Amino acid sequence: MSFWKMVFAVFVGNMLTVITLLVLSLLFMVALGNTLESMFKDPNFQSRIQQDLRDSGVAEDMKEVITQPLKQLNADLEKQNRELARARAKRAEHAKLVNSAKEMCEYWAAEFRKDGTEESEAYMDNACMRWRKLLNSAP
Image 1: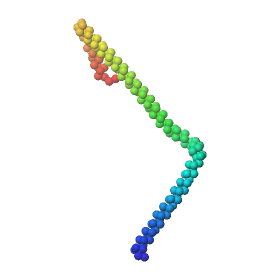
Image 2: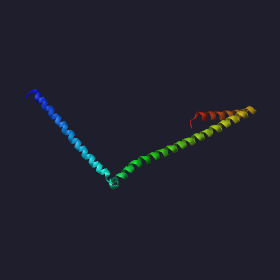
Image 3: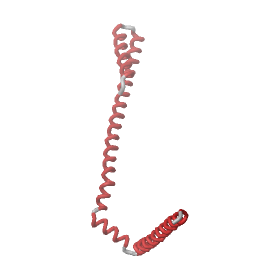
Image 4: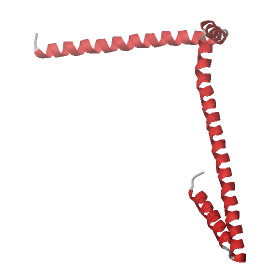
């Protein structure tokens, strides 16, 4: 056989293979389409699927898969909210302490300006030092 006859024979064989595969895939798609169409036209199809899911327990498993992370997320959020509330209360208490210390410092400063005694000066120094320490400390 000559070279060109061999090339032509291989080409024709490949073309026949491609055409055969296309025809078979088309037939498969038609059969699949008919099967799916008959399934979806069946009025009991949806109820059968739901019944199968109930019987197999998949629906309950899916419910647990969905609700378990939500429960964990809710627990984490509640814990975070409690921590934030504690921190907020701690900051409010610290702010009250700072304001109280400031009032004491101002009171003893006014007393020292009024009478000028060493006792008033010592009280003023201690009260103002406490106020400065509270201002510089974190709540």
